[in-house]
Image: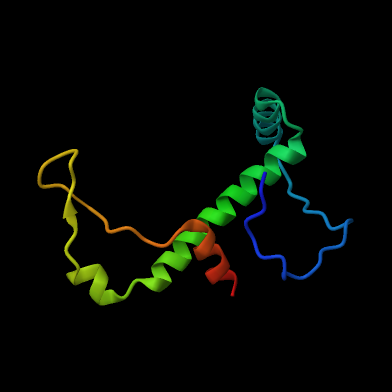
Length: 103
């Protein structure tokens, strides 16, 4: 998995850990899903958590770049899929938004 966060973040000690209480059902679901894709539980949880974090950071950076006037007044182009259905104008690339959100 490639890194997509800046390298100037505070250093984390190798023994830093997250501990999350799980119900037996939650534990079983995560273990089965990790096994299904051939990953360890740690790899699976880390991948899913980073994926969600990057998505949230991307959405936040995109919202910060949009002005209220753009959200209300900017016309959108009609979609080719269904006539008369607009699709939103393109936004910033995910990597750029993550860097922007992290400062």
